[in-house]
Amino acid sequence: MVDRKSPELGSSLLIVDDDEDIAEMLTAYFNGQGYSTNVVYLGEEALRSCRMNRPDLIILDIRLPDIDGFEVARQLRANQRTQDIPIIFLTDRRERTSRLQGLELGADDYITKPFDVQELRLRVRNSLRRTCEGPLTNPVTGLPESVLVEERLRECLHNQEWKMLTVSIEHMTEFSESYGFVASDDVQRAVSLMIHNAIRGLGSPNDFFGQLGPTDFILIIHPKYMPAIEERIRSRLKQSLDYFYPLKDRDAAVSLENRLSLRIKRLGPSDGPFSDLAALKARLMRLLAR
View (tube, rainbow, N blue to C red):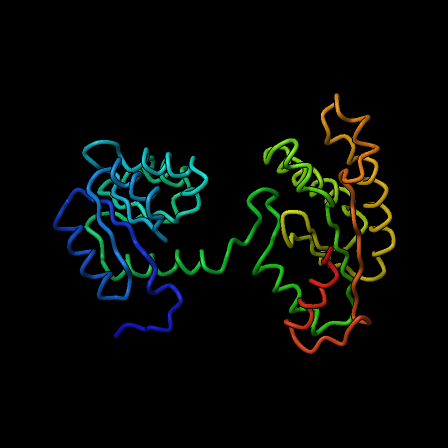
């Protein structure tokens, strides 16, 4: 019996396989499980279909008559609209090299023919649930975010020995409009690295450094380490922000009203009490509010 409460049910699947019998069987099976399915038989058709109607997940055969599944995946990952679609490869190849090639292209999973359709269903379900829950690390900085940040926040509810420090990059929107998204990503990476270097050696192994959003970072640390860590972050980052501007604009950037800057805020148990995770998150969001 289909569990209609499962959050992934109703998701759209694109099945790409030139074997009509397999494609028909998968369509009938996943429709019966509560998914919406679409089938194409060629790699180029898969690319067109994804551009027109983005699916939630792709079941992709590697051996196709026109372009192979690896090339389909490569083009999907190169397109901003389709780069995050989960892909499960179907193949009759069992060689290690083909598996590695698929994983290098960002495949979420890999299953060989002949396959157990129940196993494939579980792999589809797990991939969709991971997507629904959000990534565990930020794709630009590699810092923990989303679920991992919530786990650490939840731990704070049962422990009084913590302080939070939020570090926000101000005026990133204006910077991005002037210099592009690539330059903005470089700022994110550089700031995260500088914060990491600033806290290294000053805190404890249990301290946490994560990301709340593209311009917001969070540190959860023991109270006795807070003053030294905050001072080091302030001194090292504030004097570095002007260097993110191209050399030709650097002198002018110093006088800009909307130049890159930092906003650092603190939060601790004394700012509560926090009855549950929702209350703590709400207080944290108010802290971050511009």
